Length: 156
Image (tube, rainbow, N blue to C red; front, side):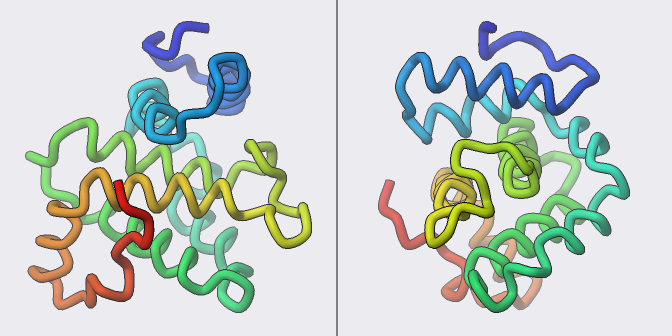
């Protein structure tokens, strides 16, 4: 599957096909996020049953084991909900990709894998936060959110 292909209606098929493509090419997580955002698009977030409420319920168990990841994902969900209409499409799409990726049961590292199951979710989230740090930092300043508690720990 070509990663620039337009999204189909089945989100799970899109992610499965894209993961197969990424595995065949070798994993460059920055490209994975960029192309995943293009593949899914922001409208694909509606594919999550129950929308953002279901997303929040699904990430709630991260509260104790992975509090930083949970805070970052909650921030991205809130940002996605309140993002300005003039937000660049690739920022909106990559934010949606990170959110959708984090709640997929079948991702690069299964979430139930002891000690490492959320490493890929954290990496994708950190990459999105890094790629668009300026936009997210300005959003935090405008909404009295502490960026320092969310900003990525990885250097891009």
